[in-house]
Amino acid sequence: MQKYIHYDPSSEDIHSYHMQVSSDSGHHYYKIHLSELTEGQRKHLSQKFGVSLNILESEQYLTLVRITDI
Image (cartoon, one colour):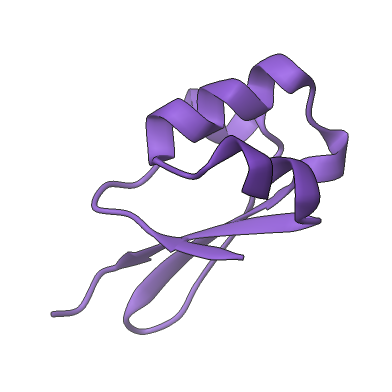
């Protein structure tokens, strides 16, 4: 699943959720392996990035995408 976000995650979030960071000419991508997260971490992601908790429990990956070139 992909979710577009307005701001880059903090370096603490990147570390806490073991995000794989990549980018291209117009986007930053933050891939999260949801199966590696605790229930508490999923709840926090749900609240912070506005993704339904049931989606976080059923999907294997979440990729946060921030558009950098408008």
